[in-house]
Each structure stands twice: as C-alpha cells, then as structure tokens.
Length: 110
Length: 117
Image 1 (tube, rainbow over the protein chains, first blue to last red):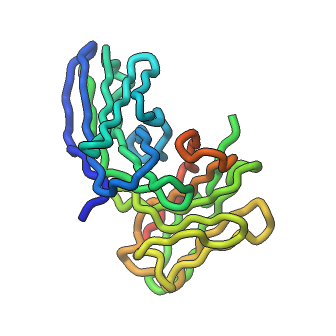
Image 2 (cartoon, rainbow over the protein chains, first blue to last red):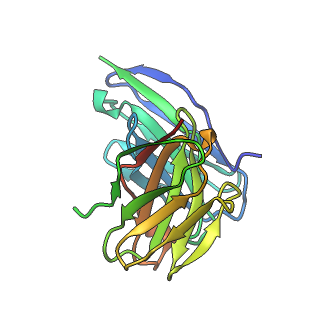
Image 3 (cartoon, rainbow over the protein chains, first blue to last red):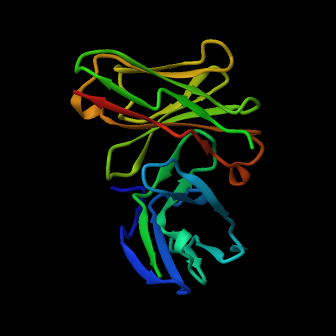
C-alpha cells in the first residue's frame, strides 16, 4: 500500500502551457499537505503548502479535496525553469513523519 | 537565507564498513530528519529526531542505523556494516518552530551521495 501516489509522468508541455498534477493519499487522518520541487540530483525544496481552502502563489495553485483524498497542483504559463520533478508530501498532523510521493516529472519545452 | 549543510557530499565505502554522515541543521530549528533516495526512486523517510531523542523511525531504520546529536549543532547518521543496497542519496532536513505543522517548511540539505562497493 502506497501512502502517497502520483502519476510519474513525464509531462512534456510547451512553454506557456497550463499543466495539472494530481496526488492521492491513503490515510484519511492526514492533516498537512505540501508540494515540493526537486531538480535532478538536488534536494527537495518546498514549493507551497496546501490549505483546505486552496491557495495560490503566482502561477501556482494548489487544491485539496479531503473527501476524495487528493491534492492537485496547477501551473499556469509554464516556463522552461519549471522543468523539475514535483513531489507531493503528506503529514498526519505532527512533525514526526512525512510521506513523499514518487514525484511527477515535468519537462517544459521551448 | 539560512541553510542546512551536509558533509561529505560524496562517500565511497566498501561493503561491511561503517559510515557517518554529518549534517548541520538550521540553528534555531527543533526537528531533524534523515531521508534517503535511491537513484530513480522516491524520497524515503528514515527517522525524525526531537528533543534529543528519536520521535519516529521507518521500517528501513533498523539496528544498522543510528542517529546522534553530539554537540547541539551536528546531527549525524551512522550506518554500520554497510550493504550494497545502502547506496543512495541521504538527505538531512530540519524544521523550526513547532507551532503548526501545516505552516512548517522542511529545509533539506544538499545530500550525501553514498556508494557502497
């Protein structure tokens, strides 16, 4: 049983495209949700936390659907620099353990 | 911006040897973590550490592994009797204030790439 599942991709999109990633989690008690970005052979870096009401940060919008246990990330007006692997991360409401999805790879082409 | 540092950046060792991976978390952070990522696979949680003790560990973190915060700044991961399958990138992370986990950022170090021959 995978705690967090993501479509591995890759998603190959042209610059300027809008792309959406989904992530599902298995534990209904999960409380905190995050999207991280990981460049090749680098460490994960927080992109944004995901709040129940949904949240937006510039071109990035995150949504949470607790009933269906999924989280989404929407990237508008894709840039070449958005090419990376996007990791969905879930926590059960404490600081002890974070579950990572396997990541969705995005390639933005000129 | 404060950052987590890790040393060494690369480590090559022979099977059966012990290795110690070192991390310096961000100075005012309270929570510390070790993760590993086998090449091409997902980031896997190993252990979390708070208030000078392990708060949670995964099935991967067996008796072969131990963590320590010997001096209030360094946070180390020791792997005894390394195996070929221990070859991976090991990331240290820390997070801060402990008020609300949904507001927390885990800051990751750049990783130590371990190769067991």
